[in-house]
Length: 72
Image (cartoon, rainbow, N blue to C red):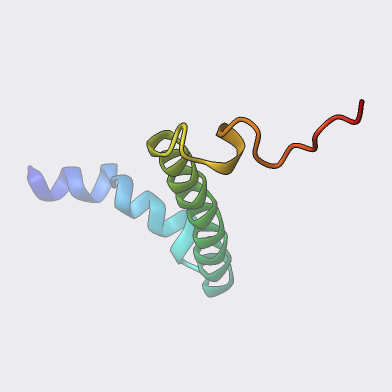
């Protein structure tokens, strides 16, 4: 019974193989696009975490720094 379900139904990994990994060009494109998207997600997450942990310590948060004195 287990072997018949495996043959007829397939599964997630078999479907992934049929869609992505069957052709080398599609697989390489998938890997490169995944690396690019993954890098962007990690970069954004680390940046937000750094900002959250350094609230009040950043140059932009300190009043008077980086602002020109108004000429009167």
